[in-house]
Image 1 (tube, rainbow, N blue to C red):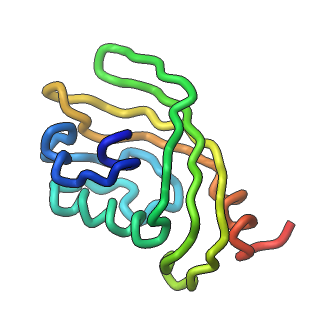
Image 2 (image 1 turned 90 degrees about the vertical axis):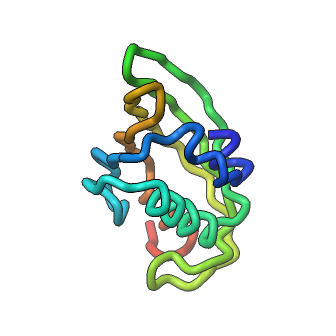
Length: 129
């Protein structure tokens, strides 16, 4: 999380990420249910970084298990790029979520994730309420 997501050191993807990375569950993620190669994984990162260049994850808890690590986190960032068809709002977001990382061959081979996208959409002004 620190090196790849927070520091945006994409050259380290091969150090941490399995060559076949599966997104098991991540509601509203365009890559949900897909298995990504390293170039596809980096494209997914770029998509996020273009929308939120200052994206930052603060890990609030971590629970390790033999082939999984569950983390909770706080995500902050400023929307300075397109999100799909939505134009940049220049608004800041702050939301929470949980990710379960799956491991194979001592590398992260996928994730299952839930987070409060509804709050993000409200903070960006895309929905009311």
